[in-house]
Length: 504
Image 1 (tube, one colour):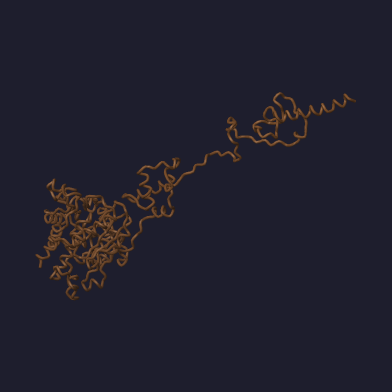
Image 2: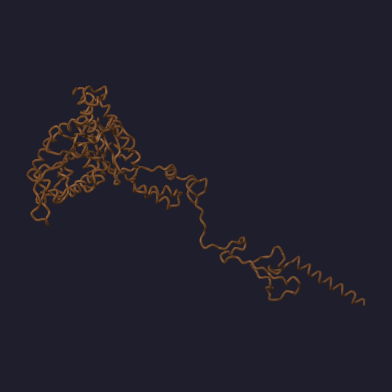
């Protein structure tokens, strides 16, 4: 009894000591599932030597196995993430307004050029570049990750707004108008074409055909309004001041009122309109208006077209030379450059001038008569600085296929347009020659059709060289401000004032 009594407590005491030793010394990792320091990389079912764990109530719970991703199993100290592994990393890119470039620290300041460009883009400004370069730049910034408003991006890609009719640049009171500013852009690839001529020579019609219309359209739909039948019957003028029109090809056309117009003079006399105080006689005021407009075109245009309806009026050439003499001087970058060179004419700007013989007759297309016309214009313009030769040729249009280039010894910028009329039997009937002998064959006119000649003339005008108007390259908006300053200087010119005093 005593032995059994002593043995039972000893066995129970020995079991308690084993359990306590096991709790204090958990052994190899993975054996104690409830311990706070277990490692989750091992399976807690067996010992390393292959011996089984003693059965007990603790082994009946289902174990929870947490495995690491394969790439992180070599790093035992890395924390375990419950987020599933991603194949591609996530990159967070900041906008330009928030700071520097993507991937840089916030305290690192961006470069000066990138900061200036970002500031210009936020303010909606662009450097002076052609339209297509501005559009490509906007697309590039959007592709590079910069924050670009989609509405602004679509606006930049839209084509320029098309004008439906001409607007006033200078009104009938000779005052400057600002309505043309909204159609201009910040780009430099432009061509400015102006026109002058006597009353009824067809200036508005020719400018409409060069800009936006075709001969087949109704003249009432032309962008520059031509003379109506009522105005023709009372010998009036349709245009007044200077009209402005710009095409989608960025070509600016300036249509003007007739020079030395008798209808404007008649209007001044009959309506008792008050003249400016510096003019005493109405005819002096009309002539000075014409000189102001012509001198203005000689300063702000690349090409000036002089339209006549018969060959030739000597007074027109005298008027052109007077306007050239009174033309305001071209602004220069510095006065020292002119003084050091010693040649003032080298810094002066002179446009290309083209003589248009409108409503030409059949005999004027004869090569012999054409040669005489070229020689006459060359002698009349011999002492002029205007570029009146070397940029336009009727021989290049294949109008006279049998003539060689050396036939015209002195070729000037002269082009002939026939009377605008419909093709077919109606034109021959109006000419008095009756119906053609063979109805299936077209009637011979001695020149190509009016439509083909207008197309060839337009291609040569648009292909003319675009010289620099001032000492800096002008954009369309800069040209508008430059033209406004030139018009103001023309109206206040001391040379023109002195000339008007000589006339009175």
